[in-house]
Length: 98
Image (tube, rainbow, N blue to C red; front, side):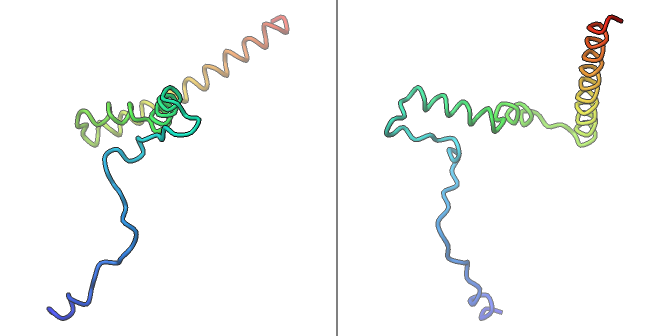
């Protein structure tokens, strides 16, 4: 067995830098000043929904409750879509003189 284990080596590839700041760094060089760098950083954080992840990871939520919460969020989104459509329909009817 020792001979077999020695023949299996980890594949050699590029060294990947996986630190906690990965994806959270913005270069400040050339025409980019500190203000624009902060604006870019805020955009990246907003796009990656970091605040939402932080809040969701703050407490443990059991699996059943998580499923319930997802169902509630989906129902609210569907309700909102229907409500907005109904309001638009009412606006159109009022314009037509109903």
